[in-house]
Length: 241
Image (cartoon, rainbow, N blue to C red; front, top):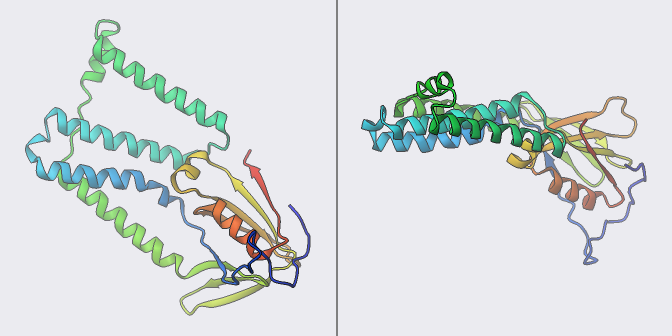
C-alpha cells in the first residue's frame, strides 16, 4: 500500500500508449448473488421434471431433488461462513468428501450399521416441476431487483477523482483521487471462485472514514485497471483472517 501522489501526466501502459481516462465502475453487491448455482440447478431440474412428470416418485426424480438440495445447502454454507484461506477450503473439501464416502458406504453395505443404513434408505425427497419453477422465478425477480438497485448506487474511479453515484435522481459525491489508498481483500475462497469477488477498501485523502465495498465482481481485473488508470497507485493484497 502506498501514499505516493498520482502524477499529473497521463499514465502510460506497457506499450507506451496513454491509458484511457474512462472510469472504472465499482459495484457492491449483496451476498444473495452467490446463490446463482442453486438458481441454475433449479432451472435444470424444472426442465427435467417438466418433460418427465411421471418421474416425481422415481429414482430419477429423487436424484434430481437430492442434487438441488446439495447445491442449495452448499450455497447456504458459502453465505453463512467465510473460508479466507486455502487451508479452510481444503478442510471443507475433506469433510465433504468424508461425508459423501460415508453415505456411499452405508448405502451399498447396509449390514455395517443397519440403523444408519435404514435411516439413509428412508431419505427420498421429492419435488415436482412446479417447485423448481417457483424457486427459479423468485430468484430471478430478486436478481432483477438487485441489478436495478445497482444502477442507482455505484462508484466510479477516474484519473483525478472518485465519484459516488446514488439515488433515483443520480446524486453525486466527489472525492479526490490523488493519494487514494486501496486495500484488496479476498475474504472467502468460495466467493472468489464463484464470481471472482472480494472486498475493496478505499481511503480518499482527507477523509476520516474508509469506503468499504463488499462483493465486487472480478476484483483482480478491477484492481489492475485502477492501477493502470491512476498510474502511481499501488494496491496491497491482504488475505482475510
